[in-house]
Length: 345
Image 1 (cartoon, one colour):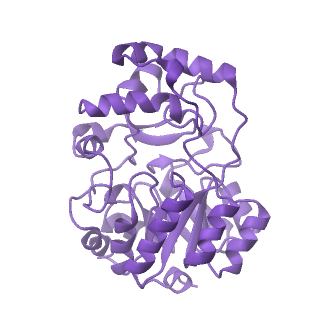
Image 2 (image 1 turned 45 degrees about the vertical axis):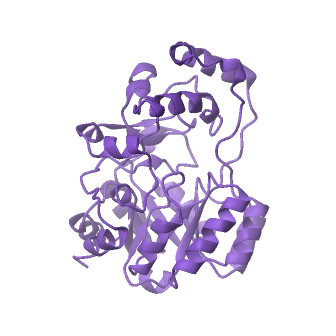
């Protein structure tokens, strides 16, 4: 089955869900252009989620995708949190921040029964997951809504696992992709392959439609992915400069600068590998640092530094999420960009 038929869309393009970088406006614009708009809910409380999803439903008659993280929250470690704050202490001193007054907090929430209750009300056409799939009872609830289920695979093994556990299509996430790696069967970064290496292997291994993600920012990239067997593409970074995106001025400036040519996987901002533009703190502490608490517990300690630096116009402590190819970022309406991406189809 073609992806357009499976998801009820005209164009086989999915706007990647980007928690913290968008609201309903981006999803509405993309869905109204005939592709699949998405929204990431990992940073939204239940009330905010309900409001955003209601706004999408009111704004488009087309299908849209609601995305959730499905990690298992870790047991907090006082020792690791202390080590992390000790690593950040020189920067706290620079900005006059008292680390004792920074509350600990998760920063990201996994899919829950409360989130499923919201989906019962909104009934989206597509629900997607990152970091595997939620517990069976929650997945069954989503399927009962009639929603199509997508999830990300970063290896062939993960793709086979997802196929065996009942997804409708698989997002093959190459290592070029911005934001969090969807890896869930292993935390070994050496297993992570590039999009055009991973994609054909996954296509051969599974019977489901495969959606290519990572480093695709223009019509030529879309066509290349389709030539390698993709049923569609998922694109995130290219949409970040659209007026509908909600990233900070600091983030926008970084994407438009030469700095965007140098990205790295880092665990400093959340505790889990995610790709962003190299900045001061990543260079100072190393992109991957063992002191960072387990995902998503690293977020709270670095948040005050981000706020102080951004107030001064600096992205030194900000997660400047971006894929390896930001060259397709354009300051044009998301609907126009969607049509340009689909120009070669």
